[in-house]
Every structure is written in C-alpha cells, then in structure tokens.
Image (cartoon, rainbow over all chains, first blue to last red; front, side, top):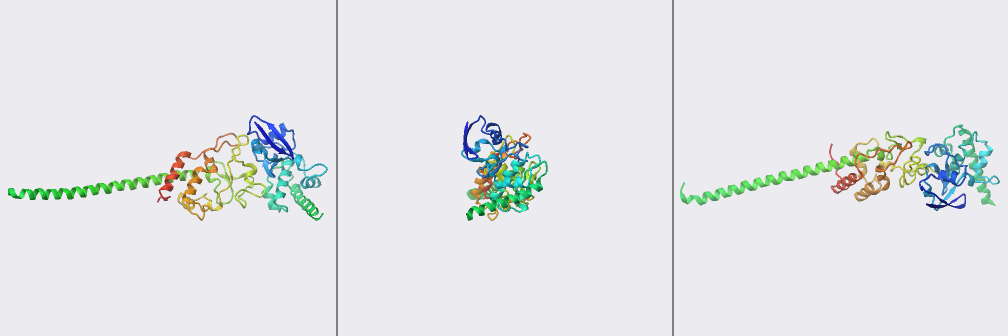
Length: 162
Length: 204
C-alpha cells in the first residue's frame, strides 16, 4: 500500500507491504534517516522518539499507516548545523552526550516538552522526560533542558521585540 | 336422609367444591409468582456476577486505579516509567498515554492500544472496592460522568476501549494477554438485561 506524509517538511510517499510496519523502520531503513535510534523495540527506552504532528511518539511502536497525511519530524529536521534548535544548542553548550546513542530521543522529547511547558520545573522534567540513558547523563541533560528553555524563551522574546 | 334433601346436599357439595378449588387455584397462582420472583432474583444475581467478573478483571481494572497510577499486566503492577494520571486522565503534558499507546494494538512492540487510551476518571477508581461498591459507583451520576443507564449500556457494550478487553493483543514477549472470564457477547447480554431489570444491586 502507498502512504503519503510529510517528513521534515518534505512530502514523501512510500510503498509498503505491511501497513503496521513500525514508523522507525521506515524512517531508518527506507528513508535512510539514521538519527532516530532503535533501542528496546517496545516503547520503553525512548531512543526512537520523534514527532508526529508535533507530539512526541515512540516510533518503534507506531504503525506507519497512522502517519498518512500527517507531519513527521525527526532529529534531522529539528534544526540545522547553521541554525540549531534551542534544544540542540543547549545540548552542545552543556556537552551532554557520552556515547550519544540515546540523545536524539531525549532531544525530541525535550523539544516536545518545551512546546507544552516553556519553563519546566525539575518535577516537570522528571514526569515528562522518561527516556533511558545507559551512560546516565541525566544530570547534564537536566541542565541542558533548563538552558534550552532559556534559549528558546530568549529567542521568542527577541523575535517579538524585533 | 330424605330424598327431597338431595338437591340441597348436592348444592352444598358444589359450593364446598368451588370454595376449595378457588383456594387451591389461588395457592398455585401465588406459588407460581414466587417461582417467577425467585427466577428473576437469580437471573439478576447471575447478570450482576457476570458483569462484575469483567469489571474486576485486570484488563478493565488496570485503568480504573484509585491512586492515580495506571497499572499493568495480570498482576496489576504500577505502570513503568512513573506514568501517572495527569490533569486530563491521559498522562503528563508532553509524555502522554498516546506517546506509546496508539488507537490499536501493536504486534511488533507488544504495546496495547485502543481509541482514546487513558485512565477512567478518578471518580471511577474501582481498585480495592467490593462488587457492590463498584456497582454503586457505576450507576452514580455524580461519579460516572453524568451517564444515564442507556449511556452506560452503550459505553459498556460499544466503546472500543471497553471492548479492547476481549482483543488485548500480545505483550512484549509475544504472549497473548488474558481476556475476561465471560465472553464479550455474554457480557453484553448481561449488561443489557441487568439495566433493563432496573440495575438492582443484589444483597450478599
């Protein structure tokens, strides 16, 4: 069957035999976007987190047919090296990653959180960022999330003032 | 006895016979009514028991917690990752039930799903309640989302999230989840009959 959707602001149509194929497999193996990672395969670790219509979802547990006509964003579409998303900028500034494998999922989850809660408290972070990092970079991530909120809010204020 | 008294005697026998037959027939009628009432009581109790066997099954009860923490599995353990009810019964602001649970089961990840996956309202927390307490809560409009009996019948027999209990899919290991002890059809019939009979909560 054919499924059409937008991914990172580009229209895309794929042909696939099994409409229940996880979106993660399509993103990585068909569309060759390797930033989104396979971790546990059962929606537990969050390494595969990406956005569908702006909402964070675990793509290993998201059948591809559900993206028909929708907008998908992966870590590759969050920002660019020249114009990184506030979350990506904060991650660089706080030197968060160790092995780095789980970080795209954390960044996508954080980007979704900041859309809902522009100034998250530590409790908000504990409740909403429930991904798993084997290197235990949680402390640096918490700092980066607060910094990302600050960068995002500053850029919003600047764009309103200009 | 004189021959002329015979008609009078026959008349007396007839009257006595009529009186006896009437009272006998009355006694049959009342015993028949008792049988009917007993039958209805038994039927009401059976329907109630069937309904409760489903409502207290893990497939239903796991999402009717009384502590704002969704439960999982046949042992009803607290949901992993610290997931909680949130403000709208569907999780936290950015990490919601729908972050992992979609409108259908996922056979690849073993994550269950159905439309509007989420917790029942806090007022419908059933864990730890007796059957009678659950029933009282179920039909109490101040707790059940202002649902009438008709609304409840529809909810219990047509809502896809409720009916998911009979099609719960497989878990992360590929094992089929347990379903309630009563079939969907039997449950539907019991629900309709129980409400039709006035939703009477039987005495213990």
